[in-house]
Length: 180
Image 1 (tube, rainbow, N blue to C red):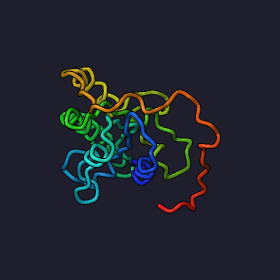
Image 2 (image 1 turned 90 degrees about the vertical axis):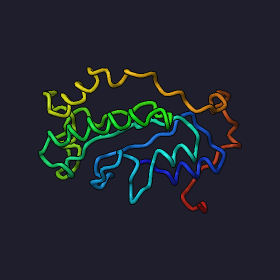
Image 3 (image 1 turned 60 degrees about the vertical axis):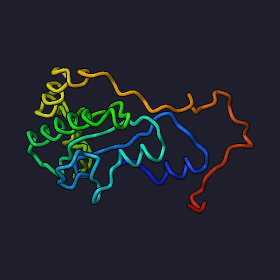
């Protein structure tokens, strides 16, 4: 998931960015019928937190249906992916939610036993289709990703990164002992 404490600390220290990001996996939903991301731990809404804390457009850099949650039920994992993409699209304009990236492309059977990566891919390790890859392609081909204009990002003052390198005197090395 998003390391929100880290992002809040950076923000408090004056660091600014152009996009706020998070990761989301089916196991975070806890079986909730709510839109993925809107009920994490008894009503915690990651979209509200990111929007209200940083007022930046939001991206999900990783999302996926956990093998540990669905086991070998690939059809259930495919259904979760379809539901998530559809529901996130329905709320995208409200949150300036720009995009989400499916994780992971290929199964990684060579990883250590018990790791999600062994079976979390939407394709097998050799690139063969799975129900998840067919569901993602069907969702995209139904033009769900472009059937309405993209959300307008929340207004904010241009890029927050100064292209001029900072003098070394302005750099700090954090060793983990700083007070939060």
